[in-house]
Image 1: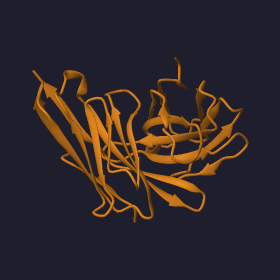
Image 2 (image 1 turned 180 degrees about the vertical axis):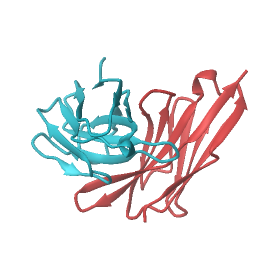
Image 3 (image 1 turned 180 degrees about the horizontal axis):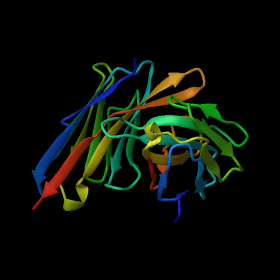
Length: 114
Length: 113
């Protein structure tokens, strides 16, 4: 069964600090891995998409890494801001006969405090 | 920059009532999706439309129907609502069904009593 597991479930950090969120997956055959940010009461917003051949991708202060051999990804947030408080969702795409099937993790809830 | 627009934002139904959730996108995207998000679970795909004129079942289609009205609009219908359908529903769109960014609407919060 395709699964995406994220850790930690929740995290509290001080503004200005860095943090790293983890994602492990068992999706096969692997197609791509995405990170989304979801603010409370809003829809998810895409941060990065990586395919098998990519092992790092950045979007501003967000840097995602991918190790397709160990089936792990991480999202590193640099110099956190209060606006980074949100749920971060790891999503893994797998090839299917009809295209690309996405499996969503349950998210890491990040809170940035003063 | 409207992106993906969902209506209504909130809805309360009684068991057995029917309703249609509306979704429209203004990005000229070919593919559209309906998801539900429940506490402690990842988003789950209900139905999707890879292109205008086609619809397919996702992971949790039971109790739902969809209509791809045109390229812009994709609606989700609950014929006889059940308490198990209490959830937050998200519509999304993408340029195509492959490795493309999916853009999400703000969601519809539905309670079935």
